[in-house]
Image 1 (cartoon, helix red, strand yellow):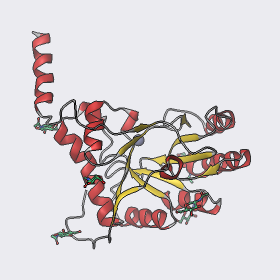
Image 2 (cartoon, protein in one colour; image 1 turned 45 degrees about the vertical axis):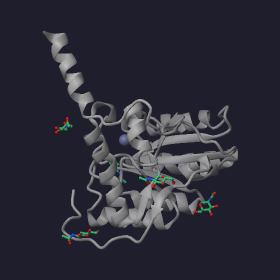
Image 3 (tube, helix red, strand yellow; image 1 turned 135 degrees about the vertical axis):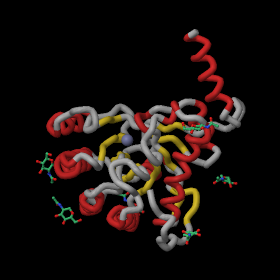
Image 4 (cartoon, protein in one colour; image 1 turned 60 degrees about the vertical axis):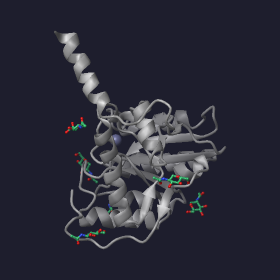
Length: 247
Ligand SMILES: *[C@@H]1O[C@H](CO)[C@@H](O)[C@H](O)[C@H]1NC(C)=O
Ligand SMILES: *[C@@H]1O[C@H](CO)[C@@H](O)[C@H](O)[C@H]1NC(C)=O
Ligand SMILES: *[C@@H]1O[C@H](CO)[C@@H](O)[C@H](O)[C@H]1NC(C)=O
Ligand SMILES: *[C@@H]1O[C@H](CO)[C@@H](O)[C@H](O)[C@H]1NC(C)=O
Ligand SMILES: *[C@@H]1O[C@H](CO)[C@@H](O)[C@H](O)[C@H]1NC(C)=O
Ligand SMILES: *[C@@H]1O[C@H](CO)[C@@H](O)[C@H](O)[C@H]1NC(C)=O
Ligand SMILES: [Zn+2]
């Protein structure tokens, strides 16, 4: 019986897809393309330290990138999170999408996958007036369906070529050692994964990483700048909060 049940389950998921194999697939970037650049990225916010991160980047002359969720550690519509996003965006850091609720997108049907992208876009259109061009799939997991849904929204998928290990148990010392070793990257660029929800990342590793990478000669730019692409697919006026702005 089991194979039949599995086949039926797979068929059920597939029937929800209106996309077909010939549709456009989003570009997947795993590394920076502009020589001599490094992009420091911070996932899973907005969270209570986003202004601290923004300040650390700004005060070092670094442009950073935030891959934000709608409702993961915090709700994007909380006043503090809206403020934090406006603050970081206003300082020239890039705001990108990391999906609404941080699921493994490859496990979702098309409708759910679209909602995961669209709800974050709506929130960022309301709060900042922008639609992000960059999407980081949670856990780095994607397949052709994810790429097609992203492409239909003019988004690129952004992975990384360096993981600070801050979501998988590395100590701050280990993360710093990894930055020391990674700086001499063969590609001459670095696309670094970090999490703004880790206090040791925010207050210890990030300042260290910025110092080490700049001393080595990298220019610290946003993901869009290190790829030579636009950060947003649209820029308009932000909205005014009302009762429909909730998680
Ligand atoms: C898609 O997945 C969601 C969440 O699991 C489910 O509620 C919905 O019924 C599914 N839609 C289709 C068309 O299968
Ligand atoms: C973090 O930023 C807040 C202001 O947003 C500030 O009050 C606080 O002192 C900062 N924390 C550290 C450890 O720098
Ligand atoms: C940061 O981005 C701004 C544009 O938003 C740009 O003018 C500046 O040169 C960038 N900083 C670096 C270090 O490239
Ligand atoms: C995607 O980009 C194309 C070409 O710039 C544009 O015509 C289309 O409206 C865009 N679609 C979305 C969903 O942004
Ligand atoms: C960071 O987390 C540790 C352990 O939970 C805690 O002891 C420390 O006070 C925290 N630091 C900040 C700045 O929140
Ligand atoms: C809330 O604001 C949005 C625009 O941000 C608007 O489209 C919507 O109609 C408003 N809803 C209510 C209930 O006022
Ligand atoms: Zn994440």
